[in-house]
Length: 83
Image 1 (cartoon, rainbow, N blue to C red):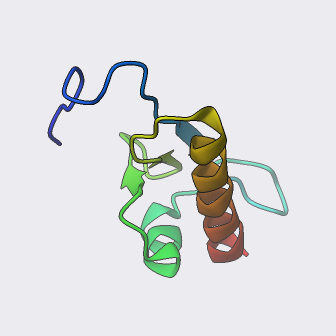
Image 2: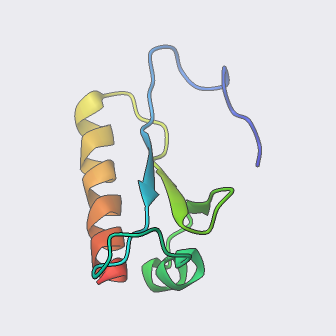
């Protein structure tokens, strides 16, 4: 993955979140990254070291409000994919 730190406009931001994938029955971690990533079909969803964890990252934004709109969109895609 390419590092873009320092290449965006000053005071720009992005949001990165990590999600643990849990069994709805036992609340234990489950290795479902591939299944959820395929269902989400979104390049903003990325693999972490363990397949029971995924990372979601917005693009670069110049306002907090714009970043929040995008992070909410990603969360909705992940919610639907995990369902």
